[in-house]
Length: 89
Image (cartoon, rainbow, N blue to C red; front, side, top):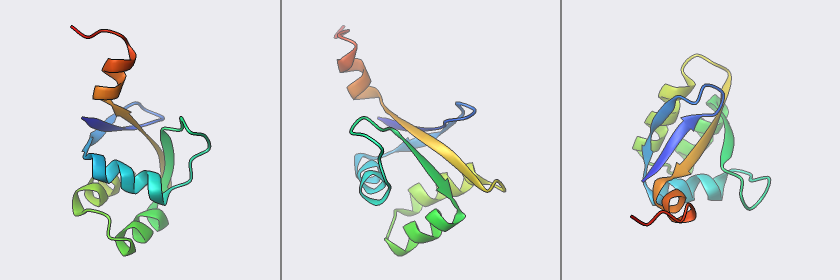
């Protein structure tokens, strides 16, 4: 499961699919191969809508953005994080 968080507050935004994560990766700039955070503002969401982002992803991000100018969101992949830890029980 992939979960989005508000990077500043660590508040959970919601869960997204692999396809929605791939959309974010494809559409937003990453600073490194291990980059897991993105800056999102109203213009970004408008752009996503023109690029056919899922209604679910747009809804989560619009709600998280609220009235603020922009937010940093980060993602975690529970399946990948579990395998990285070496704990397979």
